Every structure is written in structure tokens, then in C-alpha cells.
Amino acid sequence: MSSIKIFWKNSAIYGISSIMVRSISFLLLPLYTNSFSKDETGYIFLIFTFIAFAQVVYHCGIDSAFLQYYKDNASDKDSVGRTVIISLILTSIIFSSLIIFFSDKISIYFLGIENGIWFQYCGWILLFDAISSRMMMLIRIQERTIIFLIISIINVISTILASYFLVVSYKMGINGILIGTLIGSILKWLMLSPALIFTISRGVFSFSIILKLLKFGLPFFPAAIFYLLLELSDRFILFWILGPESVGIYSVGYKIGSLALFIITAFNLGWQPFYIKHGNNANAGNIFGNIGTIFIHFLIIIWGLITFWTPVLMRIKMGNNYLIGQEFWASEQVVSIIFFSYLFYAGYIVLMPSIYLLEKQNWSPIFRGTAALLNIILNCIFITYWGLIGAAFSTLISYLVMFLFIYYKSNKWIKIYCNWNGISKHLLITSIFILCYFFMQKTLLISISVTLIYLGILFVIRGKMKIYNDYKYIKSSFKDA
Image 1 (cartoon, helix red, strand yellow):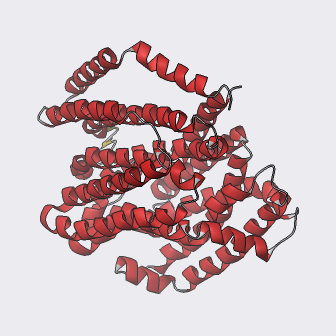
Image 2: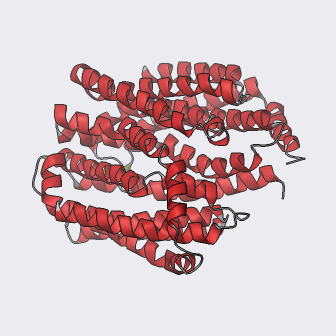
Image 3: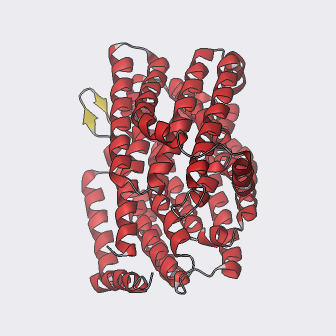
């Protein structure tokens, strides 16, 4: 099978797996919005925001180094695997112990209420997730895609079923959500235990390997922190300025808009190993550019469809409830803006080969730190004046700046020949349709009509032959890969 086919096959499987894992929060939205108040929903999202920040600390930037050095042709591959896993287990136990011990103080600091049990659950979730995620990365490096998919599916099903059962049947409230998540994490860890034991039984533990991994990976650590500040700080700023109710409404809309992030993450799971493997190809700039162009075009289409259908899907009846609880319908106003923001993040990811291949990782925290700082400043200003919409536009502007920054530097390092002119035209057409849709009545008939007209115009402009030729061009570029 050719390299390009393997890339799209692996990306598709990782994509399904990634979307399924991240769909846990999507599939739980009906539970959140129909079983909890806006305040309680706000607290749930704040707790998971804390978990997201903590996960970055647990990994300490080593994921990128692990991906770089755990290779089949590496003489110390087994020792790298053993060293990384053992060190992760030890540090995770320490971090989780601290969270559990100081849970009451953490609860007061982050939520303004004393409910330490929630953060005790967080400590255990983080412990099992940290180990499991590293083992899942190992499976991804080994391209054991089917195993990756099966474990992801079981994790999703167990988490969702446990959460619904504990909340609906046992009325456990937020505790039920956290215990359900913990059950899914433990089950995933158990499934990965044989691979974990096998990995730590081979090679030798080496402090020199730890130093090598830290030297490569630590520059990515502040970048990851900055990215989370960019991605999640608006939740806490909303909480401090407007209270938990606003966080609940905003987070529901943000979660729907972040479907783009799920797709980008899925793409990147295959993208990173791909450009590392083929970075020395003489035609790499054209290959990467064509793949990136097709991917961004795809995302722009999804942006339009999500915007046209979110108001209709929110109002689907489910017995006595709606798919999204009625008091959360105001969240639809931020969905399109958040998705639009991620289009610029997609451009950023497409240009990432210039950072990895030339080992320019020291620039990554500069890119993301600039965007994160801008996002915090804009949120403090915009939320005060425009509330939820202000938070969404802060995110949009920040991602735009981050993309422009890497675009400027990437052209000096490794020029990736994306068709930015065609992407801009597609973006303009979709923006016009979305603006027109905002002034229309949000009915099923209108959504169907706008969707058909939009897709029809795109098909006429781009054409079936053009799409086919794009694929043929990429395929031919890999003949010598």
C-alpha cells in the first residue's frame, strides 16, 4: 500500500477513535443540559478544564520527545519505552497524591466552594489517564490502528453508560459524572496493562535518556500550557466576571463548535508521524501543501454545515426533553465563531512540519504564548462588554494571530505550498452563506435549502475533476517516498 494511502487510512482510524473519545462530552450534553442547572453545568466544565490543565503538567512535554525517539531503527528503543513509562508512573503518583491531599483547598480556589471530593476523583482520573494516554501513543507509533480503535470504543461506551446510569438512576449528580469518567479511565488502563507490563519489562531505565527526552520535550511544555490558556482560560474568566451560569451556557456552545478541534486532532495523529517520515523528500513542500489544502477545504465545508444545522438539532425532541435543554439554546450564538477560530488552528497544524523537521521547537511557546496572552487580555475586556460573544471573538482573534505568526516564520524555514488563494475564496463564499443564514428563520426547511444551495455552488466552482486531480497529484508525489 502506498504511503499516501496508509496516511489517509491511519488518519481515518485515528480520526474515528479521536472523535469517539472526544464525543463523550458531546454525547453527555443532553445529560448535562437536561439533568443539571446552568450553574451545575458550569461547575462540570470548570472541573474538566482543571483536568485538562493538569494533564499537561503530568506529561511535562515528553509526548513529543517520545514520538521523536521511540523508533523502530533506534538502538535504545526498548530503554526509551521503559524509562518513559516508569518515570511517568512515578511522577503521576506524586501529582495525584498532591491533588487528593489538597483537594479542599483546590476546590475553594478554582470553584469558590468547598467540595473536595470532586477533585479527589480528578486525582484518580488523572493518574489512570496519564498512563493510558502514553500507552495509546505507543500503540499509535507502532501503527496498531485496529487495537487503538477498539480500546477507544470500549472507553467511550463504558464512560457514557456509567455516567448516565449513575446520574439518571442513582441521582448522584456531578459525583456521578466524575465516577463514570473514572470507571472509563480504569477500564482503559486495564485493557492496556498487558502492553504496559511488556514495555517496562524490556530495556533498562536510564537517567541519560530522561535528560535527552527532557531536552527535546521541555520546550513543548510551556507551549502546551500556553495552548491550554488559549483554549480554556475564557471559562475561568467568564466564571470570575459573570459566574458559573454563563460558563455553563458558553461551554455547551463551545463544545459543539469544537467539533473542528476533534477533526484537527484526528488529522494530526496521522500528520505528525507522516511528515517526520517524509520530511527529507525533495518534493515535501508540495506534498504537505496539497494535503493541507484539501484538509482545510474539508473543514470549511464542515463549518458551514455545523452553522446551518446546530439550531435545528438543538431543538430535536427526546421524550419530554430536547436534545439540548431549552435554557441552553442561547449557546448557539458562539458555535460558528468557535468553529471559525479552529480553521486558523488547522492552518497552524498544517504548517507544523517546519517546526519539527528543523527542530525549531523553541518557537512553539512563542507562537502559543503570544496568542494565549492576547486571549487573556481580550477576554478580560470583551467579556465585560459583550459577554459570551466577547469570549468567542477573543478566541477567534487569538487563533488568527497565532496562525499569521507561524505562517510568516514557516515561509522562511520550510515553504509549504498550500493553495491559500483557493482557501481564501472558499472561506469568503462560506462566510457569505453563514451571514445570510443568520438573518433567516431557523427551520428544518431553511437548513435543508441553504445546505443544498451551498454544496451545489461549491461543487460547480471546484468541480469533481479538480478534487480528483488533487488526489492524483498527492499520490504521484509519493512514488519515490
